[in-house]
Image 1 (cartoon, rainbow, N blue to C red):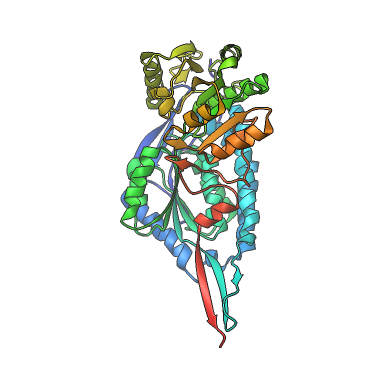
Image 2: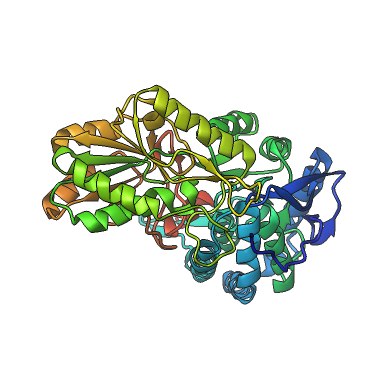
Length: 488
């Protein structure tokens, strides 16, 4: 029987101008492990969006307001205090994330939430290091640049890493002096709402952080609103294209971190056991609901049989189980809709002639009606097959083979996406050569999926543009102003 949570989850409300308010309508948020309703959440209407944007605009533009009066170091101290509060409430946040998303509590508690804290502390420290520069032009002129906040920023976050990806956007936005309107995915709003409580507790001035829950219509209203200066979005490529179109009328700045179909390349000289472990975590961590998942595994032909045998044996040990059990490593798919999407891709793989060597089925865990799918592996996959071309966003691995370096680079790059990639080899020259030729925003060598708050993350091609994390994110949350002083 699935473990019962002891958390008391209240009805979700909207955070506007420092106050919690009801929406005009409500919707259910579901526990993916049971299929049961966790609570009801307020749905923000266009009028609610107007009020949130107005509050953010006042907080940003009021020259006598509390946010404007804060120095960079004071902003940094507030963000650091928020990180401390996340750390203080880490167990509750982790459990809420697992209940709402279905991911194992191990991932929520020991991977996602600690990185939320790291990201906030990184940008707390960066707040005092956002600099302009002096530029030598004419002897009769003093010329310099300023980095100034963009203004009101709309942040739209997906359901796979709800609070973590929110922190990737909130951190740099606040460090640079912007105000924000934050919308979590409708499937997973709970940790963002708790985060809002911590924002208020930390003492952020009213209107600096506003949180609006709702579905696609709420997101569209945020994107189209003339009072918002920039949109930062993480999600599917299809929705990213809609956001670009929606932002065009008001010429908003837009940064997009979108889908992926990342190649994970294993050469015959690699440490096989390490590469097997990396391939498993690369696709099955987060139930495969990871934008940079290593969903295309390229094996050098001479090691295909040995590697696949070890891969299947390891996958067989990863049984879907209760997400609240600390021993679980494969949780529930986020929603029934997403589960059906993944099962549809599995059927497409069979139809296209790929060989199903592991998993492929929905499973019941402890008699629940949850949305669980076995870890699934297809062998004999061709690069033109649907399961090798399109992002599945589930625990489904496609195994392809190659015979030489040029061939695998051509295959790896022959895909619309370019978010991440990995190379496994003991040959240092080959590792760097392949890394340079892969069209991907991140390349891992002899590992998979490592992240750090100080390193930029983003994609090539249909995986979007702009970078999150690291100092480079500041470029997307500031305007660069040039100042000329005539000294003649």
